[in-house]
Length: 89
Image 1 (cartoon, rainbow, N blue to C red):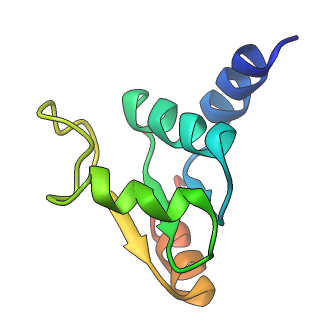
Image 2 (image 1 turned 45 degrees about the vertical axis):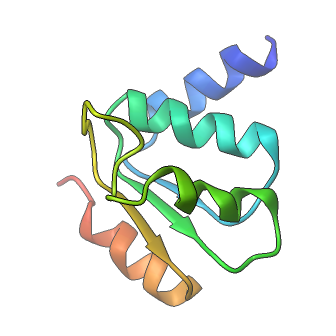
Image 3 (image 1 turned 180 degrees about the vertical axis):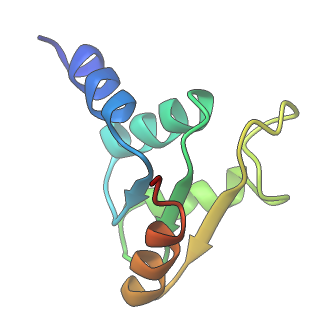
């Protein structure tokens, strides 16, 4: 399985994606999750390139389609709390 296939399986299996900091692979997965309509939480101020995703979603969305709101938080505990709020029963 290559990177794209692995990422697609992981994202389709998730209820929510939390980005804790990462590079290009992590950013691609965040954009894939957005495209798949998965709730997306991005931890900021990590020092990783993924911090710049906030620049792509100034209005809370990555594009004009507004598929799913992207949430940016700078506290890991807040990210967990928000992720749990998306839990499916």
